[in-house]
Length: 257
Ligand code: CAA
Image (tube, rainbow, N blue to C red; front, side, top):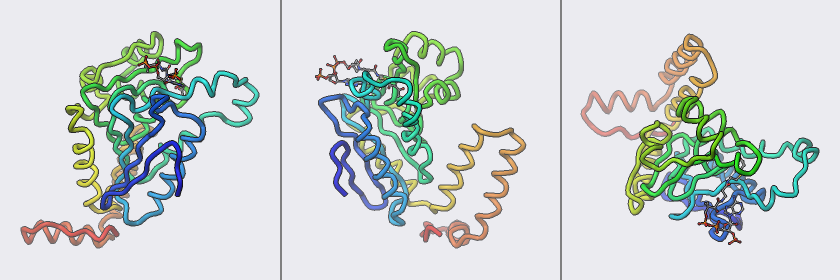
């Protein structure tokens, strides 16, 4: 498949998508978002892929939605075309996605990072929702996902003033899973993704679904949901293999079914 705004490669069972509009600091235009959707469709349909990495350049993960593309938009078209809703494709990805973030993750860039399951940040990463400075507000879930991730006090300051967070602050606030030196970001992300991709895909996908359910339901309902998935996994060959391998003191060899 041909792409103009992203690079797509595979490394064993890991699929890597690199945002690639360097001259615009990976600003997210309609074409890029459509390509990202197609790349996710392809990786999801590929039984050989167990985990996906989403990354950008050393200078920018993504500096937000493409402001020049948005500038002439007027309300009727944003409504009839349901502008931004297509971005949610990433949040509907059922396979795990690791965001490897270096440089700017601003506006839509921060929002797509938050749609991923794990965020690894390079020490030069900067996270922010500066939309307020453009006379708008976060439009790809930022006001919601950021608030759930770091709480109202900190999210409100970011959304109302546009203040950006350093990688160290993002780590301390719980927005990212950890910070690594810039030079090690890709290798660390690959290590995490390879670990996940080597596990049983049904259990990985159900664990992702179960954690995400915590944001959408009550504790009692969430626990019932988790319990059913937990019980269902005892129907898989991988549960038999994982537990036999433990008992036999050997490494497990999962069939991913
Ligand atoms: N849209 C379009 N173009 C962008 C862009 C964006 N979001 N961010 C950067 N660019 C372009 C710049 O226009 C510039 O292009 P030219 O060379 O053609 O002038 C190029 O990328 C390099 O950018 P700068 O010269 O500005 O680089 P800098 O190092 O001086 O500054 C920056 C970097 C602080 C990230 C600055 O580019 C910036 O503030 N960008 C905009 C950030 C922003 O407001 N993001 C939110 C967008 S709105 C949104 O995302 C809505 C939503 O919720 C979905």
